[in-house]
Length: 283
Image (cartoon, rainbow, N blue to C red; front, side, top):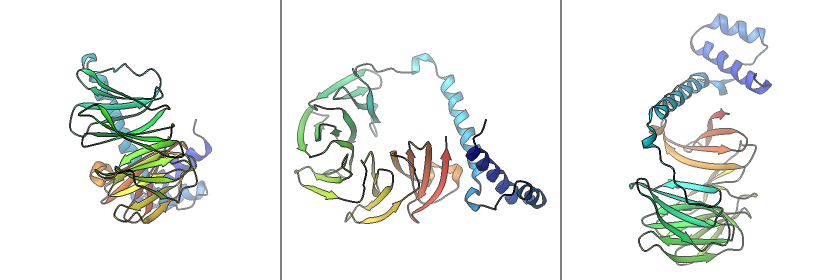
């Protein structure tokens, strides 16, 4: 059974589909019978949802066709995981969690290294050129070398850290529970950026620095000025990801986009050139 909002969304999608197919009489009839307004926000949304569903079904089918020998399970963490990321070029996997550890896994051979030292949940990690940056509820940012498997930097802050991302080889951004974005250099220099009011759980740093609580702030990488702020989510944003339009061929769009997912059960797509909301996917 569809809820009232989902039923309204479906009707608007169908209405716009009829309009763009040139079925004007059917369009007008449906619009009149259901007492609906012509809402351009739903343009092409039915086709997008259908394409997304087809892609999802294809991936499920491909997954079902995998043999059990090609599926890996990695066991080692003693408590729940908070973050998992792939190495950009090698068959390595990085993970961290509530057991206060960071672990490095070889996709074929399993556990390669375990980093210990945090005294609280490790909330997030970021990898760049042989270094792992980890944020923790203990209020510290730690930098680890994957080559020597040693801690090389330990920076204290005055708040639990919820997110972390490398901006370049020398600069790291950390999101705090206090809503402050910290830009930390490897030499220990810290710059505080204000703009959020709630804990910052999501970061990305490709073309722009992106931070999110319930809203999203886009920062220019060169001078850390604010390019814009995006509103629309109704709950905490858990993840943001900057991507090129080539990653979404079914959208038939061009430019740089941002995907954000939230506890409000939606994924929103934003155009970072125009700073406008493009689509909302509701789950």
